[in-house]
Length: 84
Image (cartoon, rainbow, N blue to C red):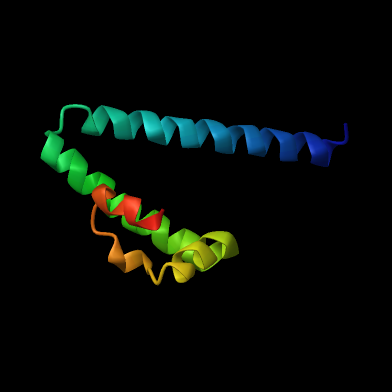
């Protein structure tokens, strides 16, 4: 393995570890939140996720468009069954 490949491999490994560590700290921060506060976080992140896949994943954009839905039509997890 060349020096450049070794560095590239180490950087990928570090990126995975940093990502895992951020999830750990996030869990520690949120583990005692109330159900309502967790639900609000979940709904906010669902909005980010739906906006991202709508913009970047043609399959999901087509699925939503075929049902005349936009990411902003989903205000809670309970709205997801409208995709079926």
